[in-house]
Length: 282
Image 1 (tube, helix red, strand yellow):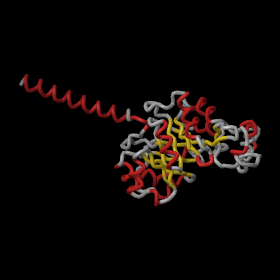
Image 2: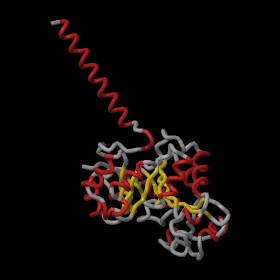
Image 3: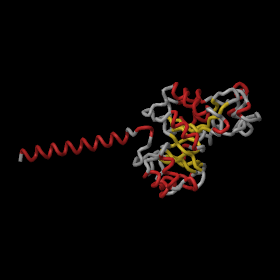
């Protein structure tokens, strides 16, 4: 009996140790990839908490952190003098009191614009931030999902973004705080070649980019496929997960859009309203 009990104890200990080891490895998945079996969904604040503060401003990013978003999402372009600036449209007309294309305005000119009053008088005086300012202010507080906007207008922008990350040691695979994405697939291939350890997301807006051959192509350089929520269902999620990629859907602006995405099994939800997304999938 003693020998049998001793053997049983050893076997039980080995099995338990293996279980703990596997669980630890899952939680420490490299490259910032989500545990696809976890009960938590990633909340991504779209252009910051842009439902509550002017998009792509420090006020919106601060609100997102206050609301416990897992990531803030932002758009990056280049000023006339080659500075990385955070703004969505390729012109300043919609979100500021100025006019003109971003690429035709210097950083100093962009800084003079009011990027808050269009949203509410409460935010008058909010400025267009630089990418470096956002990285320095929030890199230690939350994840940052960087969208490279219209890279065909800005030759070399991938290297500039990579340099900004490398200077802050945000280019390590163990960092888990940075994801770079774009609708421009060639730009993402280029960025992956520059910083292969930083997770890449490909943004898609149509079903023609979600076929099996396209997903196989994305797998060669990307870690996430981030489609418009209109195209998300359980089959798509399963096909993406089968290729060991994650999926984050965009953009939730109505609370009723959340439940179908959770039921489909997405890893993350990109939303203007971070408080719409429950902390757990159940």
